[in-house]
Length: 500
Image (cartoon, rainbow, N blue to C red; front, side, top):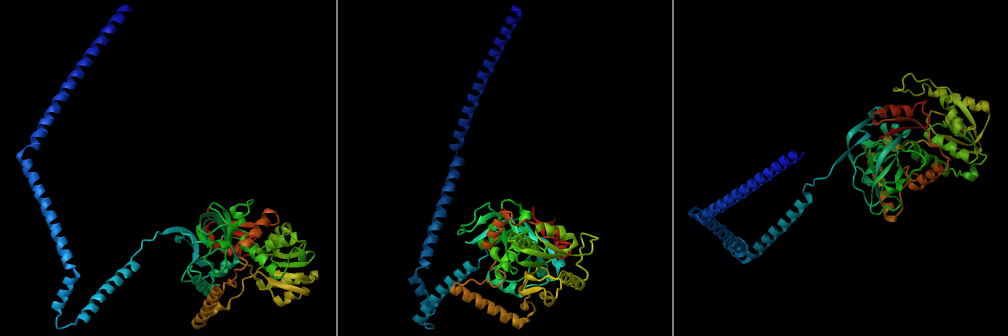
């Protein structure tokens, strides 16, 4: 053991000695090369060639400075007003008077300034362009004209009272199918210009309501905050909501109910606003509706579902018509009596046909009502199924009323060029007078589509008075199927397009 330690100690001492020798030689070598480098640099700096090079560079710099000074002096001399005046009078002597020369010079100066101003005004600005997915129509050819585009221009800057929303889902309504066929085209063109949305009525995004999350706010928006989960509803003439991002006035935005998701919530805003509007116009409320008899034609449309629930909570007696498939839903929503109408079954879910014989459907409804022998205080029509209004009015009580949630027929859609021009001028003048007098112009399906109505609906949903009714959820690429489905007899409640 001692021998092992002795040999190990010898090896360690040997390694230390070698390491010391290597370090000493490295130091000597470094000093040698450092001294050699210093001598070389000193020789180069003191060489005649380097002196000659430094002399040439100095001469070049002096020459450049001399040219610069000469150019400056000449420029000042040329720009001297007195010298210019003498030059012009010498050249134009005998041809132009001093007054004419003065006017010409002034014209050159003013023209130059105007040219610069015009150039700045017309200079090309590189705007930031962002793209998004959207459901739109570019022609009025019916549901088949609806298509999904990936390069729709996305808004990204808010005005003072505007809100930017990342859309999560939007519902499809019958009015969207009518817009595809040209509904409101004349009003849309005029009102979108007045509201600075677009200079044309096409292309137009579909969708009259949506749910989403606020991603940006205008400087003067106070009711809402970034990150709020909201729902939106808009009139028929406005740019639609079936796109990934919308820019909209805060007037049409409210916080959505916390107890429902995005897809479920978007079944309420537009349909609920229509329902509250028609009841308000007829002065129907919690006090006046109790024990009144209501007939809701097709109670399983999006609007019908809301009406049944509202009137049921107000203790009204509700009778509704619907197709056989929807009877359990109508009863669950609160209808006391349901008139069931058989509808053809679907053979292919992707190609839904409308009820084949609307005339027979109308006769069946009237026949069932005659058999019941009842009269109603209010009859509310929610779907256009070629019902004879005069025949239906026979089932109203003495002072009963007929109400409708259907879109109003617009004669302006069939106007020719001259009539469209006169009509557009009238709308512009009316809008201008309202703006001058401070009177809002809410005559085009928009007075009830506001945050006040949406706040009422939020309260009703959170209190459990309204339940969301969603039949099918589609993806944007299935928009044509969704439009056909919402018009069919098989539809119950809302059909939703999801962007998630």
